[in-house]
Structure formats: C-alpha cells, structure tokens
Image (tube, rainbow, N blue to C red; front, side):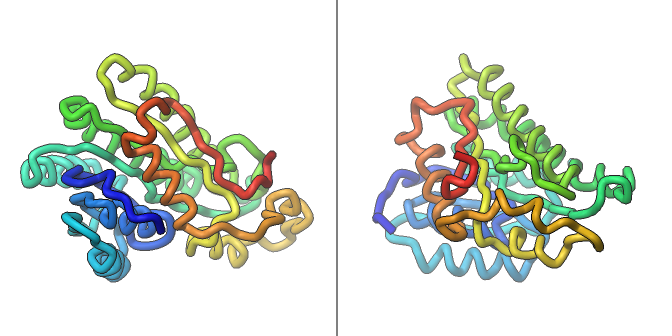
Length: 257
C-alpha cells in the first residue's frame, strides 16, 4: 500500500465496516489519517476492524465503532448526530453495509424482497439523509456501494439487484441535487471481489439453480480483493477525486467490459 495522508483530520463514517470492503476501507482511510467511525451489526467484527485500522495508523488517524442496524432510523439519526457533536463535523460518508438473499423469484416472498431493499437501499438513504446537512458545511462527499448487479443480470438475485440499482440511481440523483452545495456523491460497483458476502453466495443457490447462468460473472483474472475496492473509494473520497461526481465506478476485473 502506498503511504498517503489524504484524510488527515478528516472525519469519516464507514458502514458495513465489520468485514470485507467496509473493513478494508476503514483500514485504508484511517491509515491515511482519518478520524473514523465504524458501523455494523457484527460487534466482534467491528472490534477486529478497529484493531486492524489502529495498527495501520501512520500518523493521526484513529477509529471507534458503534453497533447498529443501518435500517434503524432512530439509531442512524443518533449515530450521525453524536459523531458530529463529538468530532465537530463530517467530511466523508462511506455506505458499504449490505445484505444478499439468493432465491428463485417465484419463491421469494414480498417480505424477503423488501427486507433486502430496507437494508441496502433504505439504510443507504437514511445515512445519506442524516449526513448531508453536515457534509454541506464541510463540502464533503459520499461514496455508496452499488454493484455490477445494478446494470447486469445476476440470476436469483432480484431483490439484491433491485436494491443496488436503486443505490446507483440515488447516487446520480443526489450528485445532481447537491451539485451547487459542493457535495460530491459517487458509488463503486464491485463484482467478483473475495468478500465474506460474495463467498457466501455459493452456499445460497436454490435447489435446481442453473449454474451455467453464472458463467459470464466469473472474473477471468481471478477474484479481486477488498483492498482493490478500498483504494478506489479512497481516491473518490479524497481531493484526488475532486472532479468526479455522480459516477458509479465498476470494479470487476473486466468481466463486463
């Protein structure tokens, strides 16, 4: 990892920070000087992420954590308000928390479908809504988690794809809505990344699933690592990404080229 200091004294909230891309992003930003708050439901994972982030500090960065569901409106309001009160403001929001369910669409209940949207899209919306007034004051920015499923067919993942398509659409809209406020809003669209979430999909396939439908989703160059995505997020959230706004950056090893 290249040693940089782009987030010195910058305040950051990272959701989904207990593992995968969220953890890698927390570590990357703290290693570059960020004062970060990690949010997730997995307390043990959060503690390990904060420990790893603290061990990567090269100067000035630090991390703390809070256990919460990103779909809990009251909790999200409190998390953002308390962090801003403690640290004096907010510069960056990184929404990486997410949930995936794999099932035949005819066998997916409406409750199951909406539970995925509630977390992936609803939780992202809640954090964006609560963070934006503070980001405007600092001319800060947001990086959301879309997916290659936002734009390309991912069989048996209708709810997940719909939620990530919504995140991509919301990202474009917020970028335009807050253009004159100086707030940038971008997203990453990972695919073929070796995360606990992605690796769990193989065990979720419903009975009778046609595995051949997934041939076009396998990265020929091999699966990427969470750190590959974290590096792009760090660029987008830093001054290096100052002229990037309303973009959804695909990170999939060229699978969908």
